[in-house]
Image (cartoon, rainbow, N blue to C red; front, side):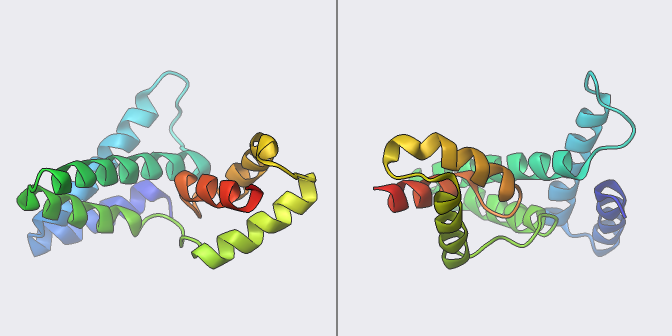
Length: 149
């Protein structure tokens, strides 16, 4: 079942349940899918990798907004962002724990022969591709820097 089909099924359920948070989130995902399909070079079928990137972008937007709202003591807006974030994350693959990430990155560092922080680019290139959708880019970067320092 494609992401679009799953979103449409969830959207129908949210409409029946009158779940406003789910409706907002699912409509945002649906809009992103439509934009991707109608973009230049886009086709009727979106690859799984593109779907994951699209969802990660939506999650990043929500996290950035949440951070801003929390700094400005706008709890009413922060609650909405948290609700949407939780719903969008359900469509992403299970995220790796910090321990799993650290173990995998150690293996990549040995594989590419990285020794110092100057080799950050080599490790990040491999790690970003390998953990696409499974870990946040910021978490990958911080873990690589920590292990190479």
